[in-house]
Image (tube, rainbow, N blue to C red; front, side, top):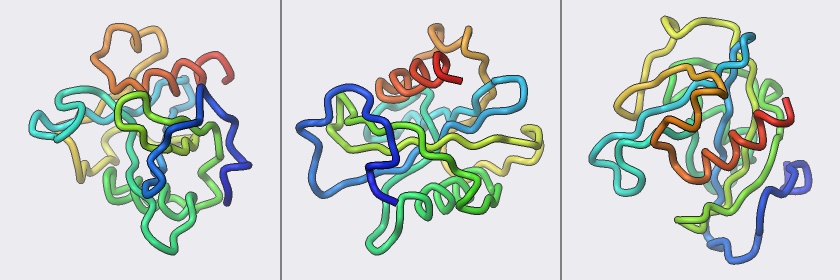
Length: 148
């Protein structure tokens, strides 16, 4: 899957050439989004809410990375086809190219086995503004909330 399947969100110039990340916007039937609370010792954005996901490994597609990262970080296995391309963004802070997927959740938080981060939560779009949030996550969720 190439970048062509993702809508550009914001300026795309200036991205680091050696990094591509896959992030996931997992949402439940009620429209709440599952977010990860970053560790206080995280090198970037400590103690902020962000999306699950991470770097694309060599030889891995964007969808493969999304599925792998989601399973590693939540314990929930999903087929690659469940991850729908949404948008691409260049992080305003890290300058990393991020490719966001949406993912419909059909189970509750009790099924999650957190593998990374300090915690997780389900949040309605009306709660986003009150959360300390990673900048790229805030931009992606703002676009998602208006397009869903």
